[in-house]
Every structure is written in structure tokens, then in C-alpha cells.
Length: 282
Ligand code: MN
Ligand code: MN
Image (cartoon, rainbow, N blue to C red; front, side, top):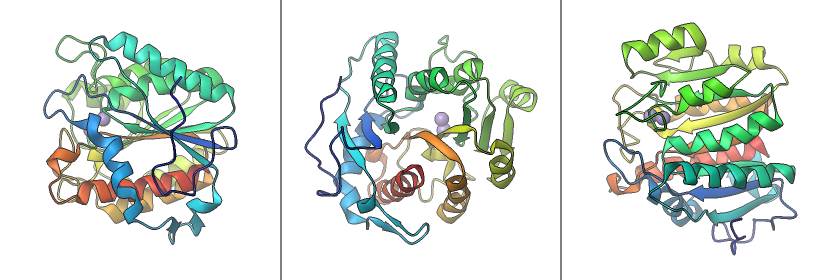
């Protein structure tokens, strides 16, 4: 079990674990990064920078100060054995779900969403997953591995009874797009299908996984596999706000890799997205 940390972001607003409704923690893992590693540095960078934005969101007229959020710091990881790492994350999430809390996890690379979502599906068999990403992440194998940031949504799809809704996808193999056409609700290039998704999902439980490379590299250079042609920040906010009508039970923000972000723009964007997600889920 990770230890509760002295609150180190927005000092004063964070609750204790016992009092919290939402538990935030980092998983600084980037062990399967194929192009540019460094997402392991994402959670700490977000903690360093998030004080730079207000706790109040004029988009949804809510304030983090009014929410019961606990920051548990980063999970200790044992690099070298992917399966052990995934098992540790899985049991951590089970523990928190048993306490009837929601989780918002800071990545780390996208593979971490698999062991997070598995226990969610056990708890909520009709779970839907909303996936924002430049990449389909639907490969069956990548470089001979079934467990990778490039296969993560395929593995999640295999466990899911509800629907996998994908938005902003503009990169993948021919096979991945064919698989998506058959099996997922894929929205290529943009986020236009969000409102339809919200109507269809209704009151079912939803997990949101946000790979920040869905944004255009012009404002999100700090990521492992930047992909031109992404959405703008305002388009992403407009896509996220309707999610407040849903029963969101968990979320993650993955793939921030701050060393490719010399101006700091990527981290400040990620911090603002984290604020909106925390407010929507609270
Ligand atoms: Mn991804
Ligand atoms: Mn991606």
C-alpha cells in the first residue's frame, strides 16, 4: 500500500485518505516506451507546477477547495518485471475501490491504465471506457509484446463488457483501424461524437483515460510519441465538459514527458486538464 503523503500540491485543500472521495496518485512508469522515454517524470512535474493555476474553474463553476481529494504521492515501482508492476498497481486500485473511493491516476505511460481498469471492471461489470488519444493503442502485439503502451486499449477491450469510446485517434496500423471499425466506437481525428456518447451511456459507470498526445504537439510537445494534427486545448475542454453529466468513477492522465517540454507549456496544460477532471469526478 502506498503511504499517504503530506499534501504537497495546493497545500491546504487536500483531505486525508479517510475523509476523501477521490484519491490521486502517480504511477511513474515508462518501461515500455518505444520512442522517447520520460513519462516517469510526469507526476512529480505536475505536483511542482499545479500551484501555478487557480483552484477554481470558470468552465464548470467549481473549486477544488470544495472537494474531498487526497494526494497519495507516487506509487513505489519495481522496474524490470512488467507483470509484477501491473499486479502491484491492480492490488493498489482494488484496495482503494474497496474503500468506495474514486481514483485519478497520473502517468506514467499508457500501459498503466490496464491494471487500473481491470479492478474497475470487476467492481462495475457494465463499465464504459472513454479514451482520448492520438493513437488507437489497439495492436495485438507490439515488438513481440502483448503488454505495451501500444496494445493497452486492445487488452482493455478484451476485458470490457461495456463500450470502448475512442476520440481524436489519428495514428495506428491498418489492422488497428479495421479492428476499431468492427469493435469500438472510434471517432477519428476529432471529438465530435462526445455528445452522442454521453446520451448513449446515460447513467452507466464510466472510466476516462486521457493520453495527452491527443492534443496537438504545438501545445503538447512534452510527450513520448507526439503526433501532428491534434486537437486544440479549447476543443479538448469542450469535449471534456459534457462528461460532467456522466457517472465517472475513475480517470487517468498519461504520457506527459516533461523533459521534452523546455517551455513548460505541456505541464501547465496537463495541470489544467487535471483540475477539470478532478472537478468533474468529484
Ligand atoms: Mn495511448
Ligand atoms: Mn498516444
